[in-house]
Amino acid sequence: MEKILEQTLLYDFYGELLTRHQKEIYEDVVLNDYSYSEVAEERGISRQGVHDLIKRCHRILQEYEEKLHLVEKFLSIRRQIQETQQLIRESERVDGAQLEQRLEEILKEL
Amino acid sequence: MEKILEQTLLYDFYGELLTRHQKEIYEDVVLNDYSYSEVAEERGISRQGVHDLIKRCHRILQEYEEKLHLVEKFLSIRRQIQETQQLIRESERVDGAQLEQRLEEILKEL
Image 1 (cartoon, each protein chain N blue to C red):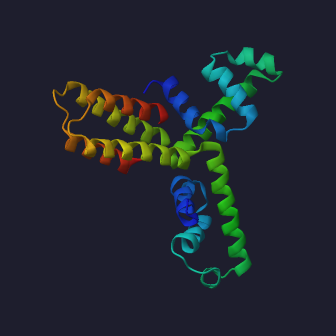
Image 2: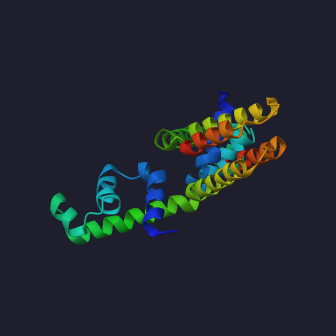
Image 3: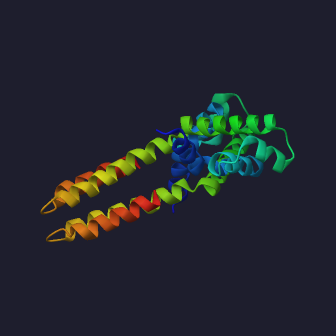
């Protein structure tokens, strides 16, 4: 997965577990693409301080994913739903039993 | 929601964020239904100690839910999938477009 996409997903799922300070700086750098230097000046902290905070946030988010696997689960369920949509689009006549079975499998993964 | 069901769901989603010690005692009391006294004796800690630990675990799990809402989201998506299954079962002929739309709504909630 592209790194920025992965970081965005991790932040989507676990961002609320960061402190407000961490969130603000993480959003500036990772989501809004400001440079370390810009954020450092804006916040009155050192460039190294911003660098360390971002690194620490990456690690925290990654550790939550290793425990809860929410991003992995989300990607798997999204793929299954999209495949089911694809199947519906390509069917002349939708097979109800097959579709119900697919939904049953998605339910199990939730 | 029934209290034990709610506690089980909270533990399913956030249990991995507890310490090993907390998990063991939480499972004994809440999931396996041992009494505080039994667990206290087994672990060589006071009954009050078990009581406090369980109370603290409930609070920790609840705080994660207040931030991440995973149980709430799970229940909502499960309900939508089950309603879609119900719709399929009750249809003479499955309406592909309607079904695709429903799956699209589920995707948005993921």
